[in-house]
Length: 45
Image 1: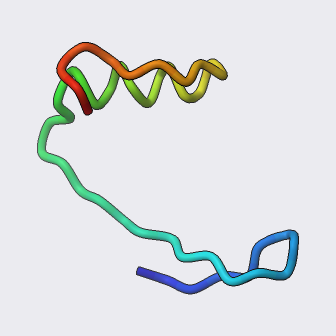
Image 2: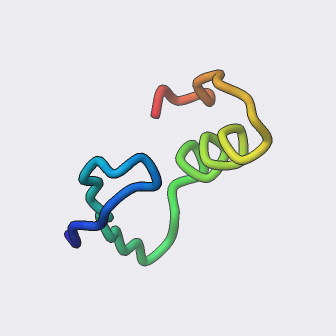
């Protein structure tokens, strides 16, 4: 975890995660977030 200052001046924290292979449901959820969707991927991430 690494503390950083956000654009709004508030403290934020970067959290690093490492996967040997990313679970399919997590990958689908990240893709949904990146495309602007807010839905929960199948599998309930």
